[in-house]
Image (tube, rainbow, N blue to C red; front, side):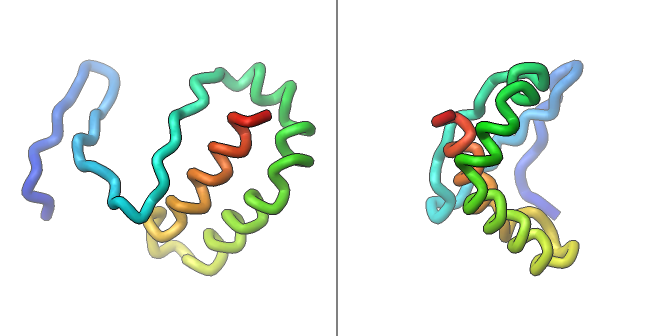
Amino acid sequence: MSARQPRFNQHTLIDTTPLPSSIPAVQELGASSAPLLSASFAIGARCKAYNDDYMQCKTEANGRGEESCLREGRKVTRCAGSV
């Protein structure tokens, strides 16, 4: 079990564990589903290679957890933010 104590807000769990340095830092998009849905075709066309890498990682991980695909997921988020 983890040695850190979780901090709870009334609605949100805040995980204070820092990410490993091997995972590139990226800011969250901060957009709701409506603008993301309207931009989805442009995001899909521009970020296809990153999306494919992420989905391949998820398929190969075969349910072993999300940590192994964080790097690819962050690349997808960074690309979507550039659109």
